Length: 110
Image: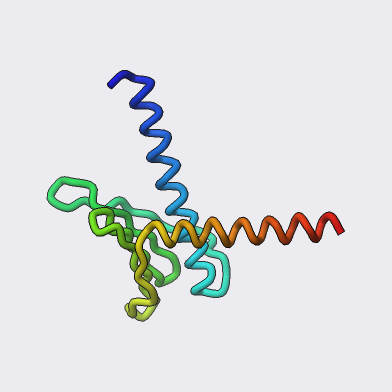
C-alpha cells in the first residue's frame, strides 16, 4: 500500500469516526433536551488494541464498542438509556439533519 492509499484510508476512517461522533452528540442532545457544549472523548484500549470510544458530558456516558458494533447511552444515574448498532444511529442522525435542512430551506424561501 502506498502513501496515497494510506492517506485515503485515513481520511475515510476519520470521516466515519466524525459521523459517529456527530450522531452521538445529536442523540445526547435529544436525550438531555439541550445541546451538549463540551463532550469529553476517550479512546478505549483493551489488551493493547483499540476497542472503542467513550464520550462523557454532564454525567451522561456513551460507549462505542467497536468489535460489537454497538453504542450504549448511559444516563447520569448509571441507567442504560439506549443501546443501538452504529449504522442505524448514524442513519437516523443523517435523516434528522436532512429533514432540518429541508425545513430551514423552505422557511427561508417563503
